[in-house]
Image (cartoon, rainbow, N blue to C red; front, top):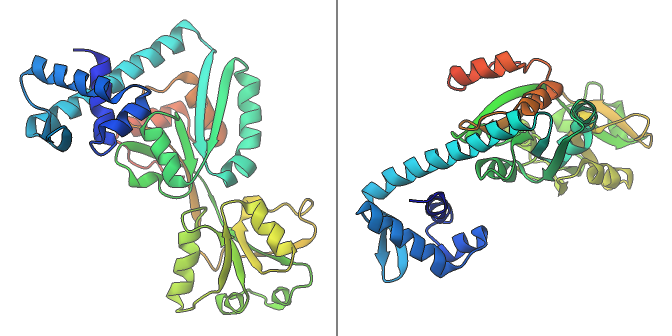
Amino acid sequence: MKLQQLRYLVEVERRGLNISAAADALHTSQPGVSKQIAMLEDELGVMIFERAGKRLVDITAPGRTILMMARRVLAEAANMKRVGEDFATEGVGQLSIATTHTQARYTLPPVIQRFVGSHPNVRLHIQQGSPEQVAGWILDRSADLGIATEALDRYDDLLTLPCFQWAHLVVTPQEHPLLAHQPLTLTALAAYPLITYDATFTGRSRIDRAFERQQLRPNVMLTAIDSDVIKTYVALGLGVGIIAEMAFDAGRDATLAALPAAHLFEGNTTRVAFRRDAWLRRHEYDFMQFLAPQLTRPVIEATLRDEGADPGL
């Protein structure tokens, strides 16, 4: 039995029993994957997959148990490598962060600046995507840590920890009629074309729920995943923007006016996530504490022992 065979099993399951897709993801050949799986079945004396000709159509009962064990073995093998790297090459390594554009652009720069100052020999990799993509990258081990507001807490295999809370802002061109509405109301807001985040980004679900509760149908005329794009089109006079408060800078965004909207929309919580079965390296603990000072190593370890109970903010 080889770790490579277990990787093939897990990848085939992840790809919906599509051997060709699994082979592409593993940068190998389809016949090679099929051969290794067949060899493992022969060694174990059981069929892991049900077949219709050469096509895999289901997972057998013993196959489900074997796959569960394979995932556990691969996780521990990955953790052994991480332990070795942490102790053998202290202060050296790589940290892969998956996050959304808003977090990468507005939240992470001072965090990364501090991290690089304290860990100059750790190479950082940042990849941006939707919250669902962020979760997927952590789950398939393409990323060590994920940071987002939406989606991360929907996955049982991820442990998510709250970092900080934030509210939305309404942004308009200077001297816009909405600036006279104090305090701002959803009814007044719904009278104008709106520009805000794509449906799965940056607290958009809370914006939609607020209008639904008052039975209002806002005219969302443009959506984007990038706060800077939203502000650009607001500045052109195409509509009123709803953005995350951390994305507004009064000096940099001098052509725009900002209206507080915390009373209109539910608050948002940005979270950091990692695999529950991952062994965390020292620089990962440090990064999380730089991101959210309350996330000290003892707090994170206590949360892990408590099977992922949310420690709160």
